[in-house]
Length: 439
Image 1 (cartoon, rainbow, N blue to C red):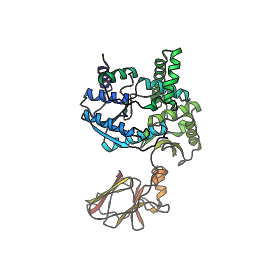
Image 2: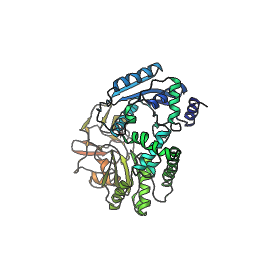
Image 3: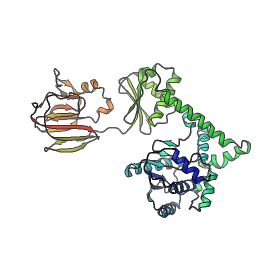
Image 4: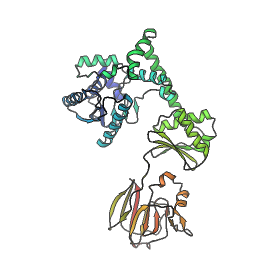
């Protein structure tokens, strides 16, 4: 069976849901072959869009971008090209990070489901060897997955020699990037110098490295499943990450605890080493809710009451005060959507709901302050808003941009936390209904 039919069969076996798909095309051999194969497969599930990042590193980068766009045009495909302007001194790690940041921003802008990349079997072997030389753990040695989140690598089972033969037979417009043979880059040195030298003594080294990656992947996947079976650990998906029961984790032997933290972080999408896992465990051992440690790349670990969270996201920032004006309206306030309209008041309102009804009054959405108090609905006395947050187990970081609804200086509602007994309309009377939800 030729490469095209093998590829088409393999693509079908991945059982990917349909949708718009970006094809990352550098202009080099691997990505041009991938684009041609995907176009020939003509899978009706995918709306292909060619994506080319002009790094601005090589002097010919603009010409390469033109060739990629021209090839996409020949295939009748939309092509998105952007200039990253990185400059000639940029290293491969910086270039890769910039490229993927651009690809995922483009994916979000175009509403794409998938990002196809051209990593192949030789890349997998190089990756395993490179990570072994860097002292990587099992997760790193596992190499690349065929499907990892939104990234799809349908060429992982095919060798570079197969792709080269296909490109020659199809007379594809391939650009040879001189950086791919520059020993100044670690991967290029492994590809062009180290692996050829090893093959002279161990001709099967590529297959052995891929086998090592498969063994490591099985162990990685086993630990990912095992954390669901450990009594009391209670892993939960969180917005932007994952959390586990801190006390249970702290009771484990340190080696087991570190392995569990690494597996949990990996499930959330963060490749954590054992050094960072040790820092996370020291945080858990403090027992101080609200403390956190930075893990890099926007990730952090934080202790929230009895849960240890590993999450990623920007620091929350409170928005400016927003008047609720008019009979109907909808506005964004930071990461929240505020909607209001007239509606008859119900007989009963929920104290911790995210919908509330008010007697007509001048209302404002604003950040809460440390001295804010309110009289809880069906409660007694006035209570500090910060105590209400604690009772509702809202993490300290999440409180930073949490809205309150106020009438002049009087706090009447903390959405999802506590409704006050102020401005309560009689049941059935026309009132102002306000809904607050995460945008």
